[in-house]
Image 1 (cartoon, one colour):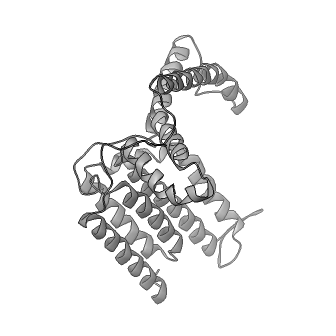
Image 2: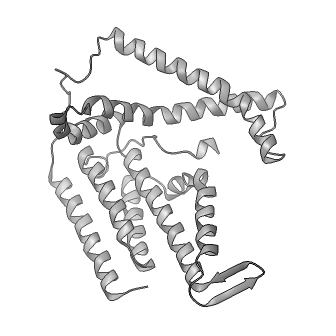
Image 3: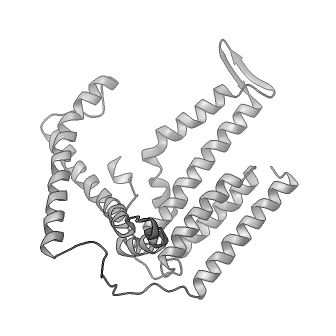
Length: 269
């Protein structure tokens, strides 16, 4: 399960999406998430899914890698589906057994929300998979810079978010090593009741948190030893510049939004 967490991982490449300005990718991700919420029918979801698959294919990232990142969220997706399935009572009744009542509208809404959640996760994965932590930090800091007028710590917030994303795969690898070591000593994480599984996680969480605090302290000491004092007076080796491919990306998202709105207007399924 831990190996299925793809958030924070970077997939190096030389595709057009890799070469996009990080600010473009950040804004494009926000715009794509907004478009997902605008959709009112499954035809719009199919269009967005085709767009995301095309983007993933152009980067060289296999679709199975993106689907693997959904496995840790499988429970949330199923829970969302079941919640909407049983609590939507409008529409034609399909199944009625005791207190369980399933309608066609409830089934449609449950499927709709599950697909929306899947598209949100997959779309967000493309950002971290195609953007290095350093580029992501620079992009976030530049976007937050106008807020410095109200004394918003743009550089510090961007650095914290970037470090958090960067250390997710590292912590997952360490958790996997600790879990294997505990299994070798007879620990059981896969069978038993929910309470028993929760108790079995204690020997995993304690050394994981200790290791996380140790890494945080080592990172703070290393930054202090290199005279890190925030963003004041710092320069960048690579200056961010918008190019033609950024304009093409904006145009592609605009066309996608127009197509989704058109499908909403005609009431497509």
